[in-house]
Amino acid sequence: MKIKSLLSLTVMIVAAAFAALNMVPADAKNRVFIGDVDENSIINIEDATLIQKYCSEMVDLSPDQLAAANVIGDSQVFVSCATAVQQYLADNYLFPNIGKYKSKYNLPDYWEDYLEQKISQINELKQSLGNDAFSFVSITDIHESQNLGKNSGKIAKEIMDNCDIKYTLILGDVVTRGCLNSSEEMEESFVKAEDILAPIRDKALQIKGNHDGAWGYDPPNTYQYQFSNELIYKYIYSNVKKINGTHFSPENEAYYIDDTENKVRYIMLNSHHNDELKSSDGSAVHNPFRVFRFGQKQIDWLALTALDVPEGYSIIVASHVPIYVAYLNSWGGENGENVLVRKLLNAYNKKTHFNYSFDGEFENDNVNIDADFSNAKGKVLATFSGHIHYDSAISCNGIMTITTRCDAREENRDGNQYTTKDDYLYNERVKGTVTEQSFDVITVSPSQNKVYCTKIGAGEDRVISIN
Image 1: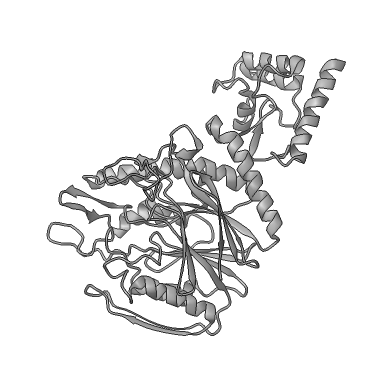
Image 2: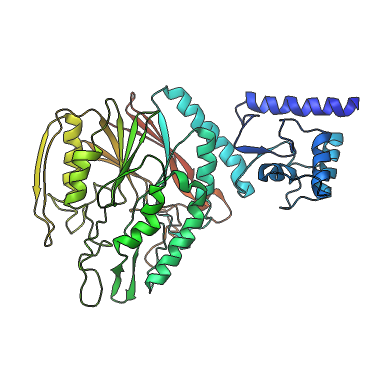
């Protein structure tokens, strides 16, 4: 008994040492201490006894307790797991899983040590930046059928739980990148994408991408059909509306939510406004897959409602297509809607009057806005986007736009992975390694005018200066 007590004390000291080294806190509420079935931060003979009682159907174990009892890693708990704990207490080296912290979310082993390091890195960064720093996760272009690991939702949840992060921004294009033949296939793709997003659904601030709801394969015409706004609402915005504190535009295509603790407003825009005009064959007249627009009503809502924040708030704006990108439609050109929004946000930051008129490329596509921002109470720090599938940071008209690379494997037009460094999207993506995913944990320091992008998976960390 003295030996067992001494070994128990040793395990407890090791756990405390882990905490002191900031590896994973011994009382981490979001990670499982393997072997600690009774959840008292100590591995001892009582844990083995509890496993035996469970296997004899004398007690029930919670999901977290079952994860802690799964010391051998066979996905099920048997009497052999109790034996393994007993042998561990006697020899302390036979079973490498025991005494380690593991994710609650059943992540592959190759993510465990990597995430431990990234979580420590993020927490240390936030602590070093002071009280005004805040973080969120940015994931874009999941493209479920091309997504190698399909683990980004679980990984984001693990990071959010352990780094005190409230929201993940899902910046569009969750569905397949391929061109589907029917509306039914597109709905199936949304359902599959939901499996990826499920762990973070209650904290996922999702917006529409150009692939979301676009289908139809009849070469040379592709993506010529669009989901109705009602179906887009069903598969995207109805989920967001369940998040407490969201405030939607009258058309239910854009919304904002406040992080009152950190005094941050997230404004989530729809860069693929759909007027639902159809040709005789049912195809979209102004196809949102290729024609990127906000539309008059959304811009009015942005200027007159969404930007009306409490005193001292920081503002994060998001859209699938970056507002610095120019396309040959109503979005681009010298006076496109992207330019309008950039200049509008800049006028807000400068607290000036803003008047702008834009004659669109299509009928009913004109935009006129007149807004007085002289009493603006907040500051737009940056805008965040996806769509282009690579990391970038570009300032236009005084507004910084930051993009995050594609979470799915990047492919060229032939459907093959980019394989040489001459390809601008090149970064080796290998299933079964951490490169199978790629997204950012964004940490913003308003007082230092810095944005820190901590890369998860394929890619590099970045530090970006903002005005």
